[in-house]
Image (cartoon, rainbow, N blue to C red):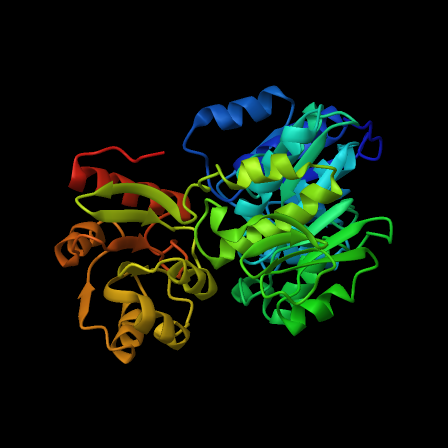
Length: 458
């Protein structure tokens, strides 16, 4: 942990608890700040508040009082999920109080090697692959952290100058990380995510670009080269750009050609030998290979990871086989693009479970994928009618409406036959019915286990 003195004697407000907020509050105390922690909700577990108070932190819960903006805070550490247009945050912005996220704090105290990963889809899988590859070759500590569900700051506290963190960073985290400077940055892709938060696509792209904002030519930006827009984004970076391409559009980095995976004209392995299924996982593998090769990882170690790693939980996660049907949990598919690529990963007929939070989208883009891959669909949640409309356009004969991803499981079973895939890939956020995509996926798996009488197969 690097010694940081800028917070010594300063007054800091932490907005929002959660993993990142709680650890940021404790870290700021260690860095010498006087800390106030505030959350609009009161935690169900009283130990959360007790632990904060035991560290000398003033705790305010149950509201975000506007008078906090009159307390002369030197810095606000905001939970990434809190929008910038809430009244309290707006007041701090008007006063030009610095507003950062836990990712900024973590990057300030971490003295080791930082590999940072962002993108609309594939972040978690790519982050995990890179961490596993680097850990095989690196004699020092390697860990993943960030948006992957592990506190970046708490991990950084434990790591030294020779250690490596592979950090998954969301656009929300990056907006509050003005000085973050990874030696290797990865942008997996950029689609149209979180526009309810960012207001428009340009704001979203700018937030993503914070991952490379402080890089120089001595650093590396690994970026998907398969769309002209992403190539244009790369030109906005000062880093040395390393492309990866599933469509064989560049040989300057990692790419697929004629079924083989290459790194700068050096054959690594056959794409079919990657254990993860689907074209999106070829892209994730290419991004990870580029980061691994730049980090000195051997081809042998890269191949060992790609031929054995079976996937991240909730991201095209294989659950089990039962009576000739294969169940997959892709609850992390919270947007249309993720479901598009999920469907492309299967040659078998698919019984699709889809729906969720209504963000005002329609799903015409899914129609060609429905036509090619989906034999029946179970729709649920706020947007089930819009999903049903797309299924009807695709000519799917078997369309069933149900309440949620749990009640969809027995309905899918009724429609299935041996050889079918039963796939939860909602194409929507979970918040209309579940607190997170993780909970949605876990409840889906429980429903599958109850239906089959078997435990998930890890």
